[in-house]
Length: 300
Image (cartoon, rainbow, N blue to C red; front, side):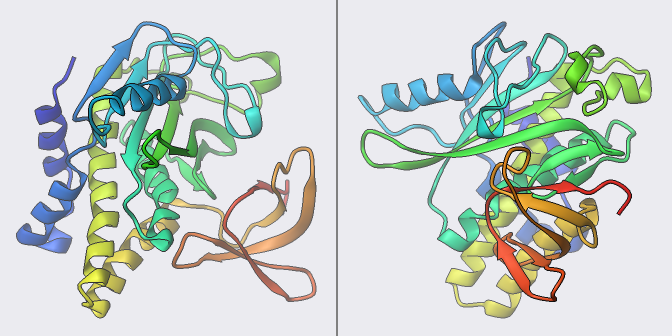
């Protein structure tokens, strides 16, 4: 099992020092360094998110929950995604959840799921595939889902607010239920290679350190009233999202639970500064949505 110091070292090795310069890079890395400060690794759990909730409740009795704490499991027996959809999580995948204290301003808090999606997509792409992000943060390869992210807000017993972020990546698992065989894929199926889950987990946490740190840095620059630099840093995070996403320009069906209750059809135009999806209706009206989900319409 890897250590927190190895995560930090890998984050530094894979950072964008040439873009930001040494001093700024070090600040970004310090902001994101809590990711992986504590890691629980279980052979089997019902849900990693539930274990995190228990840890938050237990920590309130003695101290505050350590932001960046990670719960990982080799397999999950009761996993679920958005809208209580089941998530196939047998042995061979990478499953974890982390907690991050909600100290962000609202406009930056909304970008945390996007930062998570970027980190997951970068991790998957490091394995030699061309993964893309579908807004908000599904990671897929040619329309088949390879990684999923679930973000929830938790208010602890002391009224502290926490982001709980669950991540599942299909890695070495090669068999899926019949209903998922045309919707899901895994890294071993895509590449024919077997991957070390510890190494991949370490890289994922390193990429989370960088992207969370970048988000924290953007907020601090804005609070310091260095608006031009702060806007540049924030836009670079969104620019990276645009580089990795294939949502812009697609015809989509939007809804809160779009599989059951689609609301309208539109064309995805762009991402706004707070991570909302800007869409154009057929009559030309522009709408921006900050929650819900989209389906790509086949052949369009």
